[in-house]
Length: 230
Image (cartoon, rainbow, N blue to C red; front, side, top):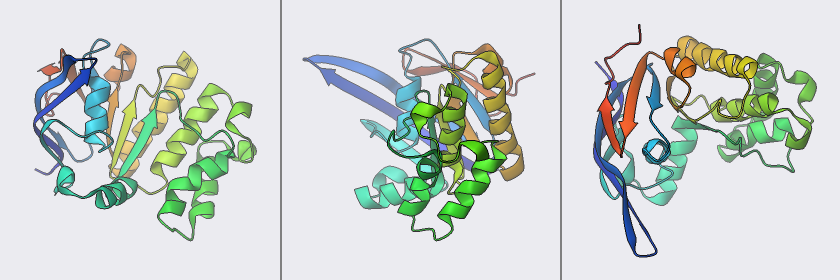
C-alpha cells in the first residue's frame, strides 16, 4: 500500500510576546494515495497549522513530513518551492486571488512559474470546465464568492498536483455553492486519483469524504487513514 502523505511526530511551537504556544504536539499520520480526507476539530485545534506544514508553507519545530517519497524539509528553499508548485495545490477559505489580475490570469499564474507554454490554453479549458468561461476576463471584485472559489480551485489544479490541500474551502459559501465546490473536489479525486486533504467545521462536508481525522489541542484524537465514513 502506497502512502502519499506521511508525518512522524510533527510538532509546532509558536512564541508570542514571551509566551510559548504548542500548536501541534506530535502528529503521526499516513494517508493513502487517492484518499479524500477531512480534518475536523474546534477552532484552535491546530488544523490550519497542520495543513500549512503538510503543504510546506510552514516549517515544523520537530518531526518529519514525507510527500510522495520526498522528505520535504530536507529540501532547500528553492527545491521546496519547486516541489510545492509541481506537486501540491492549495485552496483557502478566503481565495487569496490577486485583485489586479483577471480570472484567467489568476488561474494560469502557477503554470507560468513552471514555464508551461500551454498555460493559457489549460487555464481556459479549466475555467470552461468550471462553468466560468463567461467570467474569464473578470477581476475578483467582479465575481461572486462561489465564482472566486472556483477560480481558486482552477489555479490550484492547473499543474495537475498529486495532492490538493484545502483549508475551509466552503467556509464562506452558502449551501448551494458548498455543494458545487464539493462536487468539483469529489470529481477531481475520482477522475485523477488526486489525494485531497481538507479542513472543515461542516459535518456535511466531512460526510462526503472517505476519511475523517479529528483534531483537538494539537493532537489527532481519533480517526485514521483506514477509517471510512459510512
